[in-house]
Amino acid sequence: SQQGEEDPQALSIQEGENATMNCSYKTSINNLQWYRQNSGRGLVHLILIRSNEREKHSGRLRVTLDTSKKSSSLLITASRAADTASYFCATEDSNYQLIWGAGTKLIIKP
Amino acid sequence: KAGVTQTPRYLIKTRGQQVTLSCSPISGHRSVSWYQQTPGQGLQFLFEYFSETQRNKGNFPGRFSGRQFSNSRSEMNVSTLELGDSALYLCASSPNPADLEAFFGQGTRLTVV
Image (tube, rainbow over all chains, first blue to last red; front, side):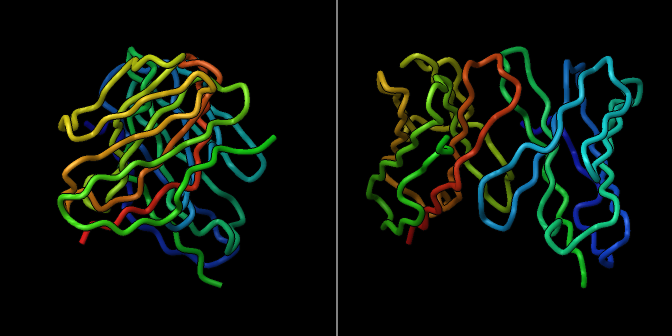
């Protein structure tokens, strides 16, 4: 079953703009991860945020976590064509298994 | 360090056949997980292996099976293929099950006709 649900399902923006994606989850978590997947390929880990953290940065990425609302957001600043991909959030269950959201498809228009 | 290697990259099979997919984890990684990804169902967990033992299994029929060898390489097998088994099969490795970051291979694209 899918724990996380990303919103929106698809997002199309102009290069240089910021992109924001959201993820909601259902149960308590220890951490939440964001991954990127280029078309039809494997997933690449972007960033992990722990339940006791509220915000984390990595380059042009900014992740926030609101455990009271059971939600997280991923912000990509100054988007580039290479950012075109699907973005997934993942949380862990008690067996350390990753449970995935449906993903947000991001398209950056040149 | 070489990444996770999955072979083959693409595969076309006929309904009723069986298929074996292979995954070589990153050197030193002993945990291997398999996922099925389809447009309709998204990423679905198949199973996880650690030290040649299956730790967890997802909600898939018994036609889906796997194993892990002493060198941590893993294979998954699907018997009596159905059209609905067409998917991207992804393998991910990590040093141990409790390690939080998973490293994914490029996947095997299976098409059942």
